[in-house]
Image (cartoon, rainbow, N blue to C red; front, top):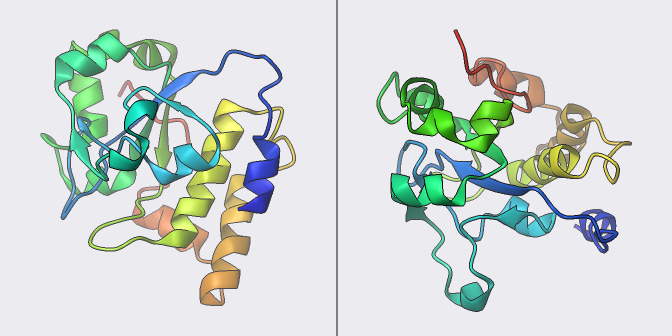
Length: 188
């Protein structure tokens, strides 16, 4: 946590890319509109989450479903997909929705191919190892110059090794069809 805070202390006057997390699990998998205004990995790397409202900091909901029109209005530059959504075959699978819905295909992140897969971290409880691993990956995507020394998969394994006694990233990645910490294919 100290390392993440140190890496993100200053932005060097550069304009940050704004971002969005979709497909966030909440008592089961959900589609693209399922998000978290105070998504912990975004908070850890000082990301500009289009959903987050700083004036409501302490009152932010842990989970929110946003309307499609609002997501289009926010038009994030980068989208991260919580891969718990992959459990659903079609409707409700955030990646499927991005590929098939012409409204989502107009989003800047989709047009530029800036859509990435991250580990699920919550269902009925939180997986703190996945929160930290996601923060490093998200930092690498949003601020490559500040995370140039980070290999996200290796960092995830070092986190899991510390927390659960062994490196499990490869197994987790396989469970999510090798889409974790990857740019997601948006065309078949």
